[in-house]
Image (tube, rainbow, N blue to C red; front, side, top):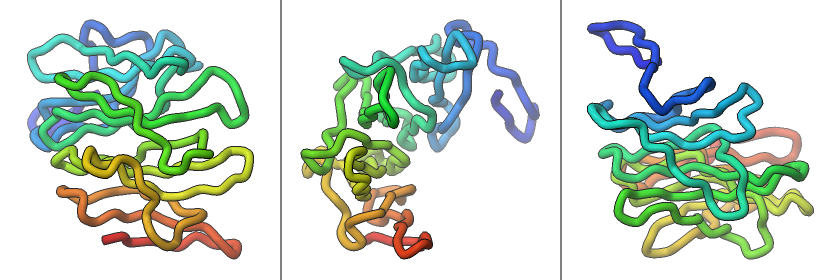
Length: 193
């Protein structure tokens, strides 16, 4: 559903949304909403949807070799850049990889920041759309690192702590990233600038 101070709750009935739908993120001005839609509560065919005020629902493709998207799709402040995570059908845990989508560039895979990794989750995008953050892992070794993606640098591992870390959010221009790291039986907040 959508909610605002003037109208309160408005259930989403946009043509193109399937039986199960959820919204995850919206643009700064609220005119672009992103989320997911599926034919069943199992979400096995979940697809990312982009809904712009006055336009039909746009269902995005998924990366080749993947089955569906996970929850947590994000959108830039102007609604021009969408980022999220695709996953394969099987495996424990199932292989995941981040993606970036724009109207002009289409769907692009976000490379893993470490060549041996096979599991990455996008957790945030800067308001200007230039920076995408998340975490990446090798599911065989359990090594997890926080990463930042930019067009100019690609995916890079954020500095110390370099293991057991997850980037969870990013400021408007991508210059500051926050998250957490795990170790010695505890979790602690991390701030990268």
